[in-house]
Image (cartoon, rainbow, N blue to C red; front, side):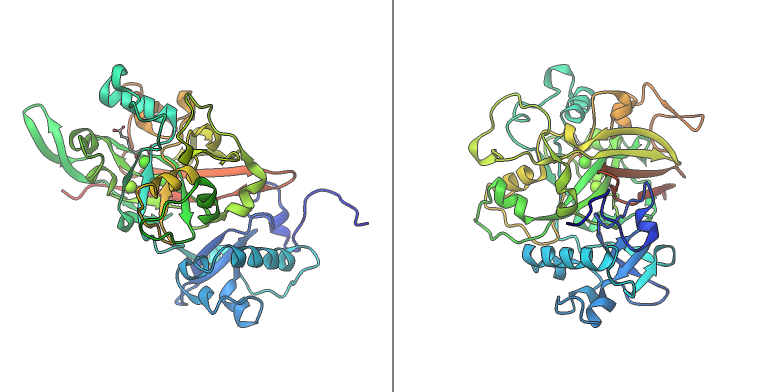
Amino acid sequence: MKKKEGPVRSWLASANREGCDFPVQNLPYGVFSVGDGAARCGVAIGDMIVDLAACEARGLFDTGDAFSEPQLNAFIAQGRAKWDENRTRLTELLTEGGDESLPLVAMRDARLHLPIRVTEFTDFYSSRNHAFNVGLLFRGAENALPAQWTHMPIGYNGRASSVVVSGTPIRRPMGQLRGVNGPEWAACRRLDLELELGAIVGADSPMGQRVSVEEAEGMIFGYVLLNDWSARDIQAWEYQPLGPFQAKALGTTISPWIVTQAALEPFRCEGAARDNPLLPYLHESRPGFYDLAIGWRMNGQKVAQTNYNVMYYSSAQQLAHHTSSGCPMRVGDLLGSGTISGPAPEQTGALLEMTQGGKNPVTVNGEPRSFIEDGDEIDLFAHAEGDGYRIGFGPCSGRVLPAVE
Ligand SMILES: O=C(O)/C=C/C(=O)CC(=O)CC(=O)O
Ligand SMILES: [Ca+2]
Ligand SMILES: [Mg+2]
């Protein structure tokens, strides 16, 4: 019998280092290029990237050249059996005793691209703490949590075109704001972040067909970190009755690595307790959340941290609800979890909540902040702690540039 001691290890030393985001248990997918070379698909391992296009050229994978494409959509569209087959193969190749001649590229030499062509972007509102805190500020205590909130995952259709990869600068928007003497045209003064997890839809569903929560689970390929940059003053003036519009169109940053659902499976757990039973179409036969520490930093200083397990609706429930009218879904659709906030101020996923609408600034590196200032960099992080390894998400950062008046 094989002696079992500690976690599975890779032959690549950097993948086994304590605190490494990308051990052999993770194997997240991304798209990279080196120098003037073409963008192609890869998998992160330690401080290296497995060049999947080169691996396929060697006959190690069979995706019909999908790995040579500059997005993962074509590979993802091949379905769960292919995802599983590739994960098994990659695990074999990268575990101790595997293939040390694999084509690897040093991560520090690579440029990381948007990993998918984002077909559509929908953003939900599924943290009770966030929904209550924001509702309190926008609508007062009486109307803080909308009546339907505990019955359905509320969302809005966002802009796929605004989704950018980590590292892309974010321009402070100009916009129409509520002034004392009527509307004014000005640079946003209340620029905020939103700490979210983005689910990547990995299978199509045809128009007119509802998808159950269980089927929806099977359609999710993986997850990225997502910062839904938000202009709160533009939002407060424009949002009623149709919801956010220009306030959420200035840019949405995602992390370059897609952590697969398979890698998160050992961390599956319950979410927040329910107030009332849900209608049958939203029932889940097993818990749909993950024990995943998630937080954000400003200019390198950690400001808040919470856990994805505070959420009220899972991405499978959000996806099932999304199809409840027969809305078709497509490979590459991105579903924002909604801002992830725990109950305490140091667990909030947005400055609006943390500072109570700007009234109580936080101190970051000795400086007060009510909202984000020009030059500030926000970066998100998430990791699940396994037995002797960690599943990390890598970077999801953006620096704010001044508005162009
Ligand atoms: O309550 C509102 O009017 C607005 C809420 C939002 O900011 C929308 C949003 O992006 C939801 C979220 O991320 O949880
Ligand atoms: Ca959001
Ligand atoms: Mg956005």
